[in-house]
Image 1: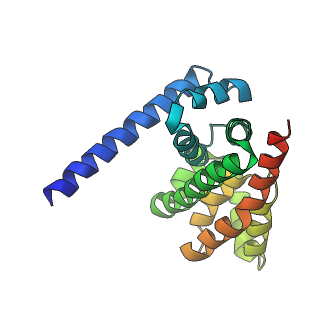
Image 2: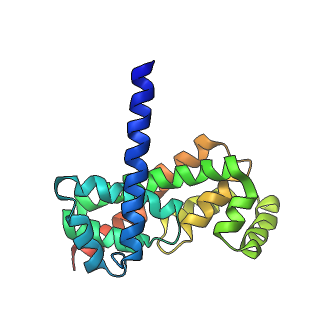
Image 3: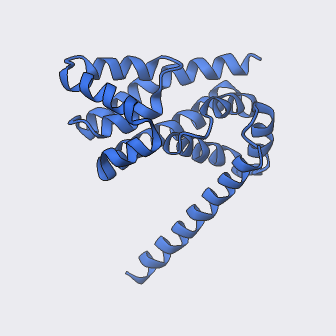
Length: 186
């Protein structure tokens, strides 16, 4: 039991430090372009793929971080396949985390991260819609969909967590793959 507590403290400290480094990098302008972001990720050396996965998860949880730069940097640094896997794992983990954060903290959290008007607009529509699940799946599969908002928003609906996770796991790879192939070709 004591080992578990020590491990929990170590993991928590590591996570807090890592988030601090990410936020510092953001405020230092490391996320302003694909070039600056790629250099930042490359600076992690052998841990660069892990760093990209974590940053991509965090960019969903903290929607101020740019996700497209991560997709481009992943493809540039690790090729289309390596970039795809780093981005897919990170974005999927962040999407599922956002769903659970909304489920736990409710409307107030979503309204702090996004506009109240946006929430109310989609809330009224989703309550009446019989096709929300199809809409969400297609949105996750297509590029330029406001994914972060809908990950949080879905956590406020009656959708089962398993169904949401399945939509992310099956729907999300398609647009990430398209980004990875496009950016690797540049």
